Image (cartoon, rainbow, N blue to C red):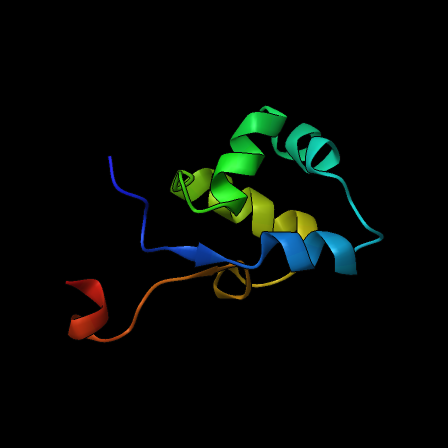
Length: 76
């Protein structure tokens, strides 16, 4: 399974919000710390529901947390 092309700003958002730990974020969205690690490292894409929950924890729009390539060249 190849890594997802979705990138994220979770690590920087965690540090901007009082140096929140991966475990704290995991508790707030109802997943394991390992799941947060995999999402943060781009090895796993969260469900749409989980993505919205993560954005809500940080109080930012979804596209401030997750980014997807814009052009067709970046997607292929």
